[in-house]
Length: 380
Image 1 (cartoon, rainbow, N blue to C red):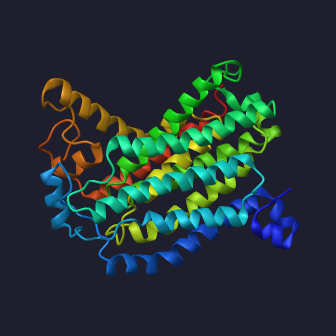
Image 2 (spheres, helix red, strand yellow):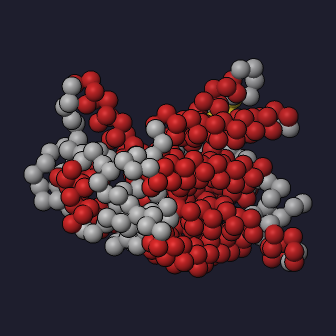
């Protein structure tokens, strides 16, 4: 058994309890984020690593950002968020657990992709960062390595349940993807989940505190689901799939929640730092990985409803604009910017909403969807 560093050093029985380590991972990540946030933000300010609000295709949004004095606000705050998250997992997580190890790799890899994207935006005048294809390529390489490792382990250890998908609402219906070429389909579905959620978190990171607050709610929900999925007594009672060792991902979820809470301290309106791609891409991918481990990938759109609503609005707007030669469905995409600038989602003219109002209401919607997703545990 190779526990986290604290347990490995001291070997106290208390560190064997997942509930204790989950709480300590959250507290440690929160404390580390607060401790590192202030000097990192100061360093970013000194080196003028600030957001350029003019790099947008929406002039109204750029003007609003300048009026609200967002120009020059430091970005790449995700660097200390992700660093605190990873360190907390190393301290409190079981490092012999495949789910945890792959979570660390996925988070680090997507953070690297986001860092390159942010760095290019800040150092190359007029650049909007990596091209869409380059960013997608980076996300794809990282996610395929992780999913490929999971498939290899599942087949080598005969744990084929790791490659099974369980739709909600049905007690006995499941899709086994461990035989023949079926793992290719599993990898494709996993790729859609990871890359889609990573980009959804990235797109939602547009208002002070929005992405961090939503991630706290969704991360806490999935931490509960991972814990339940790894408990044979609870899964038998709830008629859920039992995934051995999945409970350990609750520790990772605790670290995610704690790190986002610490980041929200600095990112709440008016934000002292922005998350940037170096933060939104990895924590979105980690959220997707938790859903895959807990066998809740098909419920993830409900758990992270606001993330996927923003992602869908951006995709629909873009393709409708191209197909119709310039016509739009939404006043602005993603939809939180339509509310902020135009005062409505489908029709402009109402009074624009303050971003604090939009953010808090988005949190409320996320909390309601999280409760609904937990209720699905018994609806089978």
